[in-house]
Image (cartoon, rainbow, N blue to C red; front, side):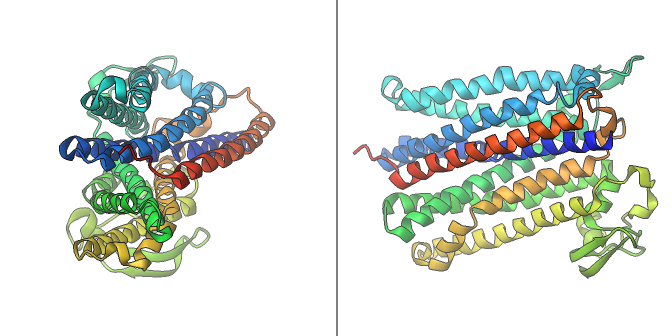
Length: 442
């Protein structure tokens, strides 16, 4: 049973990690594309229109990869996690169906019109199609996170005699206190990814001395969007999301921060340390006293419960993994803010385009927002364990009893091989688009 559960979780973790590499760019990029098209309507400068069409090509490739990798992931609800689907389908099925029927079709339909309909539609309707692509992508994220938020903080439900969950208050799904902080944090993080990709490609063009006009445009736009998004990820959205964890999942918060013992007189914030699960402490830690209490409760001496206050059977399944995922996310987020602030200062000083260390930094940091987003989701998912529905349905009770560990391992290896090929093909195609650069229409 443990092997079966392990491989079920590994397969879902792998497929959802690979899948989310694509929506995290498209959601933020859709807003930037709308911005480029809006700037064109305002200024009548063709470079903005060319930029919008260039990035929509990359958006379309990401969207296609997201669809291809998302379908197998959702099938796992009926294969590896059939019991979970049977028990909770009356609730999560509604938001997932709404995401597929409304948001996905809205996004995909108007994506085609944006890509191929500019001459037929005219520029104003072309802008509208881009805006509807943006609306569809952000609505899709909202409905997915509404599902996820219910699993983290179940609301508006009742449990029938047969153990099934049913919804008795539909509006509660969308007024869930967990939802909006998580959604805004996720969307800001998506915008961070797209900002670093756009500014990084701009930096590449400037370093290679090709497509210089677009290089400057991409760099400037990416940095302006990036500095705002990087700060919003930390505050207020990240702060609100963390306070939700403190309120609704205090044991998760203790594990995230590496608090094994309740500290009297205020909790320190750990900058560096390694969880020692045998001795239940952090090794080699570097910490600042009382800061965590202030950030959490705005009181220097506020008490934060340690893991010692809770039943061990409810501990997160992988405390070291949770701790490291959270600290990687926070550490990278801090670096993003610092780099974007340095970039915006140089932009205002009119020296950004010639500051080589910033250009190289923006180029080489492109993969790291993907890592930060992934570890952010790992923090949420590892933090909820050992529950599928927090405090109501354990992960072990949601797995399919008839799917063997051998079957799951075999298909996991198949997914790894297939996704490796898809990933290589995707990189080749995106590389060709970037190398060719935006196609000018003047």
